[in-house]
Length: 196
Image (cartoon, rainbow, N blue to C red):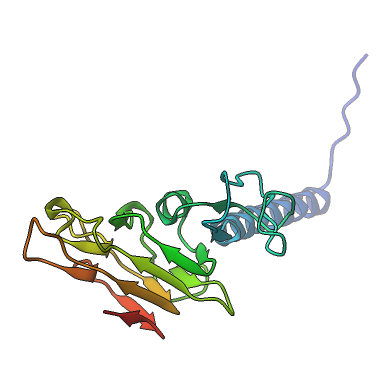
């Protein structure tokens, strides 16, 4: 035998208010989580040319410069470090000279604004000095450019910061074009860089 209990109007109103309160709480939680996720993935990524292999399990050791730590991911070439970036990430190059030919910055990870977590950074690791040297490694296809994205169409880069870097050796015997950095439009932000 089933029994039904009828609720008065006040009870129904209180139940509706409670249900709406739960919906608002869950909605705010979902919105906050989505916003947090959109910024939470910003990471520090390292480039260390002394590595014998990449550290891709978050096991890079800043102090030991090997894959025995927990400081994040690290790559032994600038290009692989760039290819691993997502919007908002910071790429720190350990001190030394990097001779990789043209270093292409992917347009697929352009920043969105100058707000924290929304722009990308390429910089020397604090207290060290990284040099990107293209001498003798560039071709006409690269337009003699050490770093950037000289390709048209679709070569637009935006919201990238460059800090404490030296870029040198742009040019090629195959072309009269040369540049340390080349990319159309922007915006870009350069601080304490030596480009020659």
